[in-house]
Amino acid sequence: RQITSKHFCRIASLLIAMSAKYTGKEFEDLKKGGGGGETLVKVGLFVFFIFTRAIHPTIIDASKSVDETTGKKYFEYGKMTVVLGETVVTIIVAQLMALAAGVPVWRSIWAPKPMKVFSMIGFIYALGDYLEMASMGALGGAAYQILLQSKLVVTALMMWGIKGTRQTSLQWNILFLVMLSMCVYMIGTSGDSSSGGGGIPIMGVFNVLLKVSVSCLCAVLSDKYMKDFKSEPIYVQLVQFKCAWFVTILALTFIDGQTWQNGFFTGWNQVTLGVLTSFTVKGWSTLYLLAILDSVLKNIGEAMAV
Image (cartoon, rainbow, N blue to C red; front, side, top):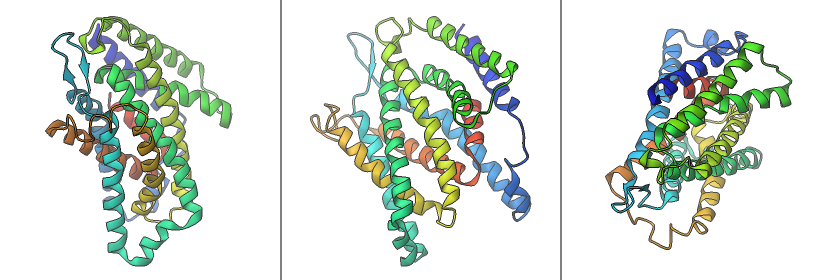
């Protein structure tokens, strides 16, 4: 049942993505660029994004330890330590790239107008990272990926409420089929040991749904404002995102009851470094995709990554 439900969700998600009306603007800039080389780079970025999104939950799930008494999986390291570490790595690397391009480029990072905009979005992104780690603590990687597809429903409702874009009857039917498939999947895997206790982890599901809402909002805002400030290099925008991102995550580490109480690097090992790397690569590839392509292709890529 698990394999059947998972594959059905993948097919349904792709059908929704492909059933959106094609306007020709999605790849408009490809026609203006430098020919096949630029197109190949963008296709390569899209494929790389799918790959990173596919393995990210798997790496997080692999970093869990198993309680020998209960058999329940848990994070031996502080959940927020890898997220905080990723923001530090990105801020340092992106600033070095800006300095390599020249001091005036580095100074442009602190321009008030874009800094205010990207700081606001970075704050919301940080909440999304917190929800991601909270939900992965209760769910397995496969369950997390399946539930993440509910962003197709959230996106459809946002488009209807904000932009007035209505879905066709076929699209709504497929959306409901995806939701039913996710319910079947969760029921079929409710006895899995990774859920820890033999029941459906309600808080884990709730955190995923909140993560979905945050992810959809951030994707739309990033898509819009990274293009509005397209005169800035993407690595400059990354620092502007990550400053508020870092401050928010740092504040959350003081209330999670684990990060500083147990020691920041307690429980870290080679797999934890893999999680840190995965967060860093995922963050850079996501924001580059939103800057160069758009949020529609981001959702399609995440659907294909299941």
